Image 1 (tube, one colour):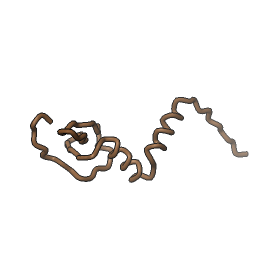
Image 2 (cartoon, rainbow, N blue to C red; image 1 turned 120 degrees about the horizontal axis):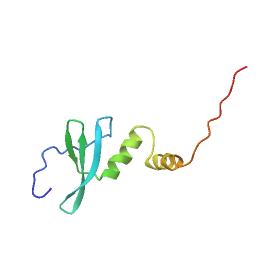
Image 3 (cartoon, rainbow, N blue to C red; image 1 turned 180 degrees about the horizontal axis):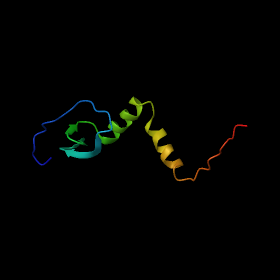
Image 4 (cartoon, helix red, strand yellow; image 1 turned 120 degrees about the vertical axis):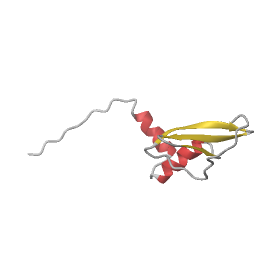
Amino acid sequence: MNGQEISSLIDEYEINPNTMVVMPLAYGSKIYSQIWELEDEFISPFKPIDIIKKSCTFFGSSYDGLCDMEELKKYRLIKVHTFNE
């Protein structure tokens, strides 16, 4: 942050439809998160991965489950149609 003061420090954050990016921000010897929303900007004292994992849990998933789903997207899935008689 190059000597800039932290003006919009927040303690909690869940990723939401307005979240555009959660990126690492070096602050001294620590890694904070810089969060950009459509019309706002925040700084959190937590690492981006911690915010992502907490948001996954908040919405009923897990980070590992999210990674597994991304892995499955690499494979072509065949749709099976059933017909009612």
